[in-house]
Image 1 (cartoon, helix red, strand yellow):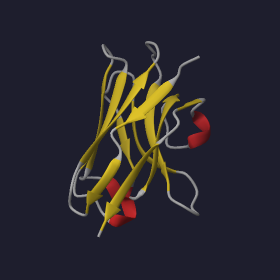
Image 2 (tube, rainbow, N blue to C red):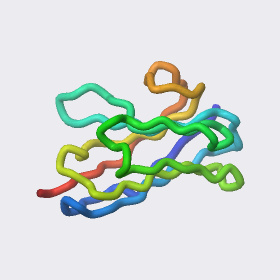
Image 3 (cartoon, one colour):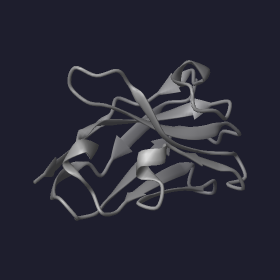
Image 4 (cartoon, rainbow, N blue to C red):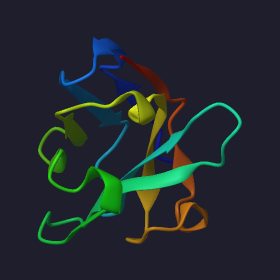
Length: 119
């Protein structure tokens, strides 16, 4: 069973940047995704990347600001977040599973890392 651990969250001012990392406990051929959940809201898709890295999906509101990447040699996936906005504030989760935008497709999840963007 794949275990995922996120890191890199924190407090940043609007317009700033953060880089989230997700380390997998073992090599996996799954796609990797990032999701987020703000207080009182449902978990929503942010970005996903295929096993080869050749296919990426993004939520419309983060296109051009966020970049997902992976390093299979390190069993890691990253989310570079630039031009952050207060509405990006949420707990960010890493997930592993078949490629897609729906959370239910992903059987493996990390514990999450908090991202707070101040205005």
